[in-house]
Image (cartoon, rainbow, N blue to C red):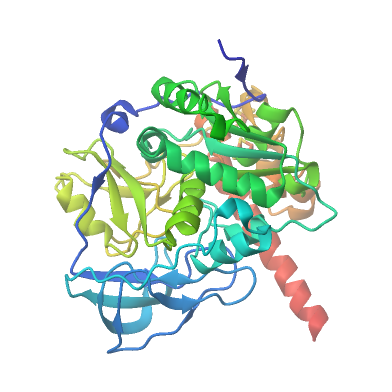
Length: 448
Ligand code: SF4
Ligand code: SF4
């Protein structure tokens, strides 16, 4: 019997995972054309190193990292570069991308697997390989992994948590990977642990994935995985949030404005751990990922292994989506996902799911706050959402900042729970943007 970890606050939205949790991952056929954005990560966009007319192979670098906090991007098909230009991005912006026509030959660039057994390699050598393979956080954050694995020497890491919570409703991509690629992701966890020099490494899984807990626990009986452990989490949203996960597993608190490394922790998503394994063991760059396609209008839901750059429209067609009723497609889960402005956008490194919905965000009428305190009780960041929202709504940004508006992780739990239907997270997000814009303007002014 496992002890179950949890955190204070949070909500219990319906899981809605039954539709896809038992569906084996299928490989989705590469499309005729891919559009691969040069910006699929936090930090500087990659810089294109190919031009119109160039022939490329699968796994070939098509964009070099644009700085230390950046990541290279690789081709996911073999074919010819049609253009390098501005294309719609899942975030709603237009960004630079490489458009490649697939020649259908699936020719690979030579994959350079690691030149020695990983256990004999220095952390720096492993990090360099991870960097070259374009690995970024695949749970949604898209922070370049080589940066996360390079904390300064005055921030020693003693705890690595591999995040298998997948607490967003509907999503099952990580769940399937834990069942179908168990050995690979556990080896990825060991590689990551070695890089960080962490004593403890816990694979943290919510208790609504009993089969994944069993599969991983069984593998851990193999002596080669003796340095890993399983941590069972109570199913609750947002249990997979970095700070909530750390608090649940270690009882430590990331300080306001701080980072997990400030308290000796690093969190990596299970998909990222597997991508690290693929990079180090097979020399494979990050050019495909598993995506859950689901939602009320998806007649044939699936977990698909998709090439990066595949247009969303192709995937929805293959899953028999009812386009006559379709009002909204969300990339990611329903709580923190982003509604797509067009279905021409491609799957990118952070696309964990595509959710089809028959209602646009309803124009729900907001009622006055009744001071019920529910939003305060459930806020996983221990904020007072009602008060911060009031300040943000009135443009009192300094007051909102004083009440730690910038600590909001935009999980949406307060909006979900508010009986007055106040879209608290919307006002808070707006306030954050305004504060960031104000600070950027002040910085520019100071540099003049
Ligand atoms: S204030 Fe932010 S962190 Fe707290 S519940 Fe609302 S969205 Fe989540
Ligand atoms: S949950 Fe809504 S009504 Fe209740 S205190 Fe918060 S903002 Fe006010």
